[in-house]
Length: 494
Image 1 (tube, rainbow, N blue to C red):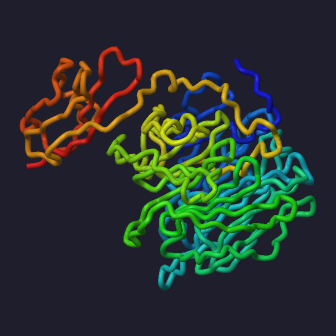
Image 2: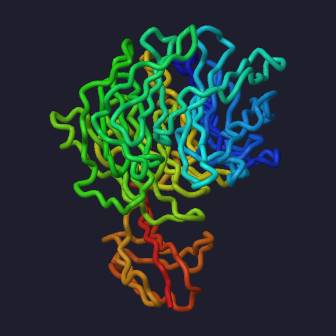
Image 3: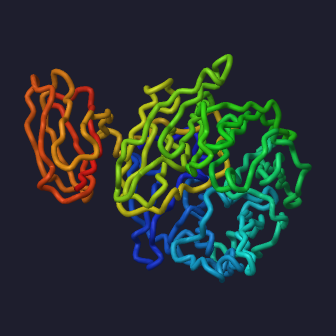
């Protein structure tokens, strides 16, 4: 097993997902202490929606986690005092918490600079007006002491308001350490406004700083719950992205907590305000590239370009995959293994992965549905961490080997027409390649298979004998040194 050079900074080494409220051990876990890395099952004891935060100790051992409805210890048992988190009118009047609390990037767990066993849990709570059912959010905090309950932790206090006005966006809650490597800076954009809330945690507690200008207006309708924010691994920049506001980049001073030098980057030349695409943003470990995911597209932005706008490149387009529902792109997170993982907008049995985020253009190697999960994970349910390892030479460990990596095939688009079809289709095959053409049902069952000679350029077949539905057409070449395959989803209609 590889020994990492940053064994003191593994607070983000345990990722939890999925549905395990029955305490049966069917929750999904990714433990980056394991090399080779492979997703497994664990006893999470709760179900996760978008709300997902956890923390490990410096050795990567899980301490506690929350799905927004309760706070659980490392064994998946509810902590003393950890019940009924975010239990307000929104919860009581309509949200059962059966699958966890809603709201991506709405929680953070941060260590207490004054006490090495203490942790602040910052969380945003949905508030519902019982008369007109209008929703707003309140920023609150709770406190966990890991020295209690024989080292399993207990909640000291919870639900203490930090910000009670109804003008903060859902999502975008993020944090980074002060340059002193003890205190924390917290940044949260406001809604129907053009400013950021700034908080600082130091040895004396949590304090609100002066608001800072965002230089862009964030609306409740188009910005709230629509994207994410992320600090660069070197701690020098802050990025915020959603489809409608597009990409916004700022310089960040970790000593003063000041944001400056705002840059607005257009990922799309034209915006359709009728679209409600979920989106997210993440950085490569070398802090050169920014990646944006916008439902159907992944873009790479090269910040080394003299004009960053010239550095925008599309590196992936959603391939139509369903596992079992559509796996369009949503939330991204840079893993401790230097890869970027992407959760789809729906519950899924697989995640997408960017294998080489530090490489330019398509060399970054985006693989859709490249991480197979042992059980179903919730929609967009990536954990939200502060940016760790900012002051260490190694921001991540590229020597962590993924068990899914050696078997990955790089997907290319297969040309099939007409689409949709009532029966007859024509498939254009890669030139000069022999191989196997497969037709696969939405349930993953192979319904037809054909041997294709290298001289065959077009192949016709009839789907009219198959039930109406979606089918995946795949071509796998022989002698596949390039590890490529071609695929296309086809709708069979009446």
